[in-house]
Length: 110
Image 1 (cartoon, rainbow, N blue to C red):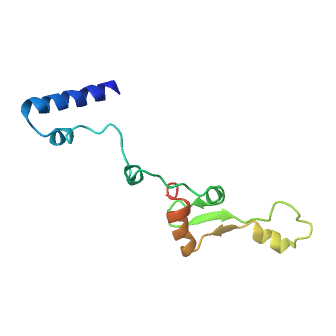
Image 2: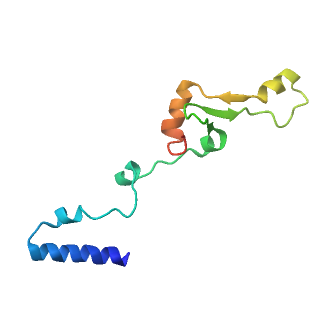
Image 3: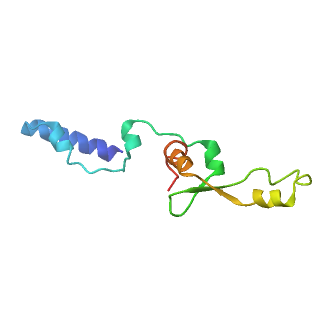
């Protein structure tokens, strides 16, 4: 961190000696870390915790999948066909996919 401060100080001093604007020389300095649009804007969106726990993105990145609720307990009163349906995977509709990508899972959605 000190080397970056020294480099900036050296650049500012050399600009004063040469009577050049400081901004034109500072633009040519290398970037030491990458930035994203969210970081440059000064904020980051938060992923929805409930959506993170329930949804997984498919390998293609075009859709999401989740397990159905109600399959783990109180199964004595459920018909076998109902238990089989609850054990299958549920996929997101196009409207759900849009909402999951934009609002609920902005960073981990593939």
